[in-house]
Image 1 (cartoon, one colour):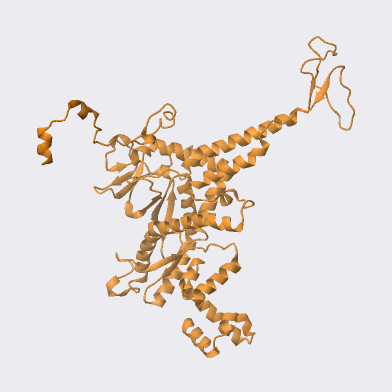
Image 2 (cartoon, helix red, strand yellow):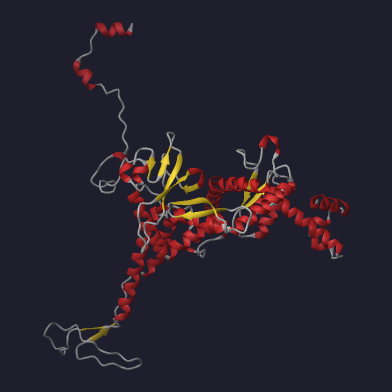
Length: 490
């Protein structure tokens, strides 16, 4: 009925023009080009992740980041602190198979092997390389010089080694030294035999092709489809330069003020009654001496016109901005907590420690698990098939990884007494477990309980006061303690 009525009574053309356009037009201020923001967005582009992080761009960023870390004390400290907090003294392996004997053997042998190849030190180096180079590479190689039955070793190389020697032959399945399959998975890496920056050595395009199964490559993937990494401190590089320039400007101003002790000036008009003096003449001043000025002339000390009062504030703000790209609070980046109270310090550390845990999980999955798989395969060969994990899992070197977990150094609490009380409360109301509480400290709960049982048994054997065993243990009946200690020790 409505359509028929509208057809019988046509609408005037003027009314149609006055009706609003039913199509809605949205607008974003950030997408508009104005005279004010034109220069700010001049470098914005639509390049892909690999095109934006091209070989030339990454080389420039690497060189500048390495220079800044090598010459800037704050940059060096930030990168070192990040590596030390993430890796610490190194990860520790706990096997979770059904055989305690096999678990203890593998944990012990892997720990010996890790110390032999300096695994913790290499992991710290890889973490530093991610921060200043953008990526870290490690090749699983055979090292006959190792003092261990397993000759597996991890050889670190810089990102400069991995590149495409023949750039004119690149196709869409190769990204600066990384060969990809049809699904975008790395299958091989081109590694130059000589570092491109070596001096005194003839650098050529000789290279080796390393299978992806032997190469460990880690970087922070900021965009989908990204295959090479850029330095994690890239957003902070201009800020480091600004901090250095401002520091030099303040220092130069202070030196200029100290070099000129005073100036002579006169209130008399030009060609007036003041005695004549030589322009730019130097008058030597002696300490504790009374000085007479020429007639009509006065002496005034040069005031240091420098922003000395705002220097500390500027330094704090720019360091806070520098550390933000690494999820690091200011007091850790600056090594100064004088402006913090207890609550604000803990609040800032929560974000940082969460970032550390995420990074540790990433390293455990992308680095440690791959190293462990290769190590178990070689250890199984040395064992001659003696060690198996049941018919379902097959031998250690099979495709199925045995259950395991990694322990890292615990994060120290700023108030150990409060943390101990909170821990006791959680254990009392059964909202946590010993495994979780020991794991937060980077310890194996089974190993700690066995050690505790040995200590309690030795205390009673030597006839020492039972108070040395701890107040929580004294309340338990002695027969139950002895039974628990005997069970744990066996």
